[in-house]
Image (cartoon, rainbow, N blue to C red; front, top):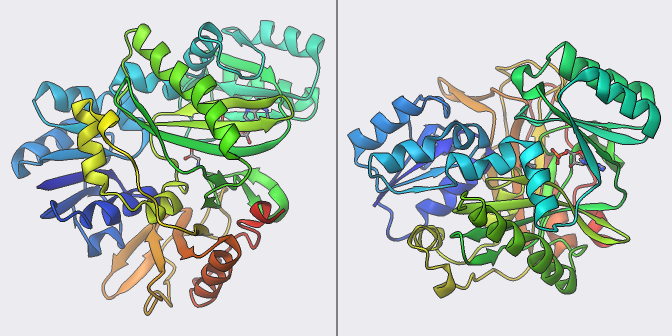
Length: 420
Ligand code: AMP
Ligand code: GLY
């Protein structure tokens, strides 16, 4: 079969890598892909949000299954459009993807179906939000309702920061219409974890738990990023906690979405805070996490295409996921300046001769003549599979030491929380 992966980051490289290993797959396409994906797939220069062009590609190449990586095309309705044309596609439809596309909707569903989350209030008007923040005080968290490329959440330690967030989101409109409404919520304390599951709208098949590293510097210092590294399995989610998350979060969310006439098919990702009162949901995502997909897919033994097809057929009850033993750790190598402005076009060296248990997933890379150059903020996701977390950490940093480009920076402490 022919499979199209939509997107061009580390997550999509991991998806294309895993999908291309299926004996059933003859060819993988990727739109737009990157320099690493180009080595295993045919990359077509189409933006993920260009829905008509993607539909045309699927028609022209007679794609048997499309897999959507990022949130924007899901929220824009790419799945609905392909389905209308009769093409199989893995990912939630627009109304279901709104669980990520609208933080207000996510909160309302959590509230209605008793899913544990931070207490919150919704505001459509800056003045009312300001009055509330002045009264309730800090710390608090201010979130733009809509998609904001991962930048729409401000964890405010003091009132001034919270009021500044209200001003920039609702009055300066830094995220456009995503800031028509905001959620102001209680600030939760604890360790974060990423819990992902396949779901066909009825059955929920959990993946191995992972942990992301959102802040740019070691020891969780500095501003938030898309994610500077991830590992799996994450011991913070003990088997008992995983069961609790299934019962209190994942199953009620899938059932609640179905009851709201938003049947959910695809990967549902719960971003969790493990508080001393148990796991609480920070956010839902309508897709694989990036970088979490990289260690998770490196550990997945099962044929991903089989699992995706079972999802589309509503037959996940017939599937059990098989995992490799051991652990996987992914370290993101980022451009100088990221998550702020950064330069592109820096030549990357040292990508050859990786050991068998290390894969360098590309994110922001491009090919320029014979060279591979940087083309984004997150450039590479170096991912290693080891017998356990300490050995995977050792392997991954040995591989990282051989790679370089001007301005390259990365966290030195990926996976350390798992060792505590
Ligand atoms: P989100 O996009 O909603 O996951 O938010 C991005 C990041 O902000 C999360 O990964 C957390 O680190 C932080 N965050 C979000 N909501 C809260 C909260 N209620 N309490 C504390 N931190 C939060
Ligand atoms: N790594 C966080 C996310 O994918 O949203």
